[in-house]
Length: 180
Image (cartoon, rainbow, N blue to C red):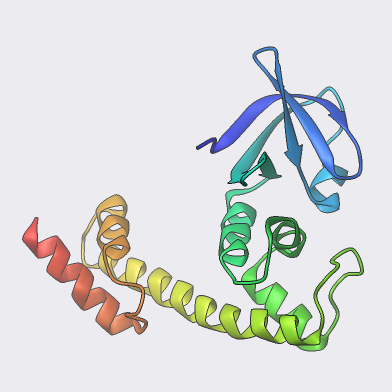
């Protein structure tokens, strides 16, 4: 995987930035928000997601790891493709996205999302927000108990996704940590 690119911004248009790294220009799809924050010729770092299709390989770029993480969550939702996920991720956070969908105020640049699909995304996001909140709280609790952040994160990553509440996530992580 290509996690990020660091290089000079060569060309850009309304959908794509070309990042020149070591004499090679990488075509990176970016949201209008991302493209508005960068200008030609400057050194940039772009976190990327490599989307492989049967007949193409596409890079999607983000200025922050948080935006990349949001993109990955959205891209995993059935019926949401990478271009739509990229546009939704440009809103900033899961909570902000949830608020925008609840109010029915999706930006006009985000095409192909009707009321039904928006409700489906909202339903899946609600579960993801609870899961992320539980993981963050569980991580804080493990760190408070004296475990180093990397070990605590690793232990939590071993907890099955269907374990949603914080107390159970901590118990499972502690079981994992106790085996090591």
